[in-house]
Amino acid sequence: MNILLINNGTIRLAELKSLLQNHKVEVIEFCTLDTINTEKFNLIILSGSTPYPILGNESLYKQEIDLIKNSKKPIIGICLGFELIGYVYGAELEIMQNKEKGIVDIQTTDTNDIFKNLPNFSVYESHRWVIKKLPSDLLELARSKDGIEVVKHKDRKLYGLQFHPEMFVEKTCGDEIFNNLLKNLAEN
Image (tube, rainbow, N blue to C red):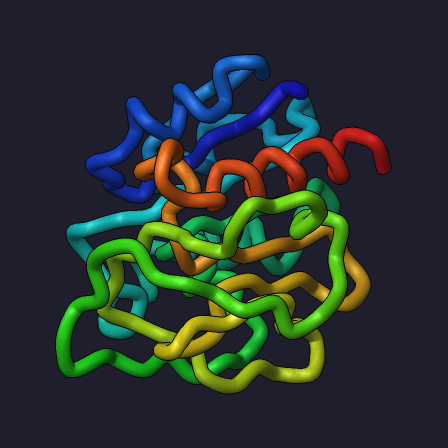
């Protein structure tokens, strides 16, 4: 697939690119989205971030917010990308008392092919924000003790992963969920 990877300031760019090594990937910084024609890509990925939360910095993410609202292309949001998708559709973002960082277990809450043949349901988390309740446009597919972990739009090819599939691929199934999702999007 021809993938546009929008870098929201992730410190895990090399790991994410490694996860996408079998695809053609073009990386751009989030604030330069208006300089590229997104129509030439099969998929858009919104990376995680460390520097700026969405709330209080909405103007920084205006281009991505508009992209999520208007693009007909499949989109996968990771961590901050997940939060952006939730924000666009009206989910309430809640700040956690303590940052979640480490390997956690998730539980599937709806059947989906992205969870097929997994050896476990452990993923790597590193975030301060959670979504605990979804608006009607988004469907919950999995959750952890802290909140919702995987969402899908009810009508569009739009997915969000609160966890980092690019981290600790030997110890978690995040990369397998992500690769199953890429495979499903390529086939449909």
